[in-house]
Amino acid sequence: MAVIATGNKSKPKGIICYYSGSGNTKLACQYIVSNIKSIDFDLFNIARDGTPDLEAYKVAGFATFTDFLGPSYLVQAFLQKLGQQNGKPALVFNTYGAFNGKTLRTLDKWVSAKGFKVVAGHSLHTPESYPPMVARGRGNEQAPSEKEMNAFRKFVAELEEVCSRLKGGQEIRKKRIRIGLLNSVLPTFSRTKAREDMGEKYVDTELCNECGVCAKLCPCGAVTLDPQPVFDMSKCYGCWSCYNHCPTKAIYTRKFRGVGHYPKPIRQLKEKLKV
Ligand SMILES: Cc1cc2nc3c(=O)[nH]c(=O)nc-3n(C[C@H](O)[C@H](O)[C@H](O)COP(=O)(O)O)c2cc1C
Ligand code: SF4
Ligand code: SF4
Image (cartoon, rainbow, N blue to C red; front, side, top):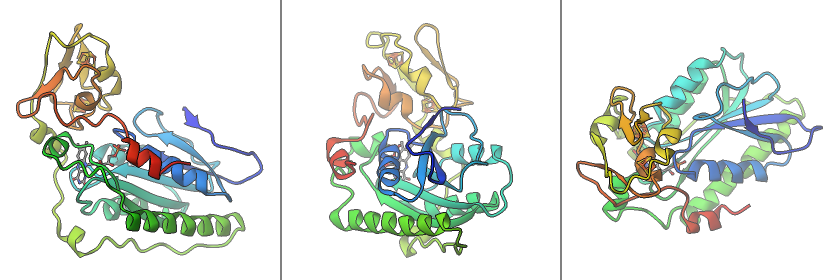
């Protein structure tokens, strides 16, 4: 297991397990852990690092981006691999580009079903990583707004308070996750919706340099190189990671070619979440 260790041996340890396609969620998690002083958090990449042993951690976090109005099913598969917990405190967190839907509530439900006690939760509005939205000029480069940043800072301050009480051995009550009326009426989608929406992927054989980035980053093992990529649609989740990260923009779909890429957090977001 590879974790990014963040600190000092004498403090209690926490861990945030994150799934981040383009880095927004990872960046926000780095902001969170660097602003929490009473517990040292490790960061754990759900898509790369296998399964963590949570025994040594006083608190566990689960973070993801909104993927078709809910948390990615990869996070659910990851949670299924963890052992049943007996009330270990947990935090839930997600980033989203436009419409969050029931992401945080569903994540709370999945994490709670695993026996964790969710003691903190927040959703942060960030720029869009979904190419069809970016290509249509809906990149939300300005997100988060000052108001949304203030709400995020408030969440981090409340989390610090929770961590300090956990460090002191105090019992913390379960947090009620609120998602607002609009989000609560938005639909949830089946796990195949994203894949169907993306459809077949093609490769511009002139542009592809056979670098293998698409195969390396596919979280589902749906890409093999021969020597150019071949996509296994039965394994694909429609996460757009291969499309977003191809350095030559060689991957395309029926509707989108050479547009809307979001491979990493944009400068504006990096400045707002600077640590
Ligand atoms: C496949 C896919 C589906 C997405 N679906 C939604 C969505 O339903 N609602 C939303 O607000 N943002 C959606 N987004 C945008 C991301 O949630 C948002 O940009 C997030 O900050 C990306 O985080 P990451 O960089 O950690 O992957 C989607 C992005 C991708 C790639
Ligand atoms: S990432 Fe792009 S250039 Fe690299 S192998 Fe895949 S399609 Fe080809
Ligand atoms: S093939 Fe591309 S879109 Fe499908 S799961 Fe892999 S990285 Fe995501």
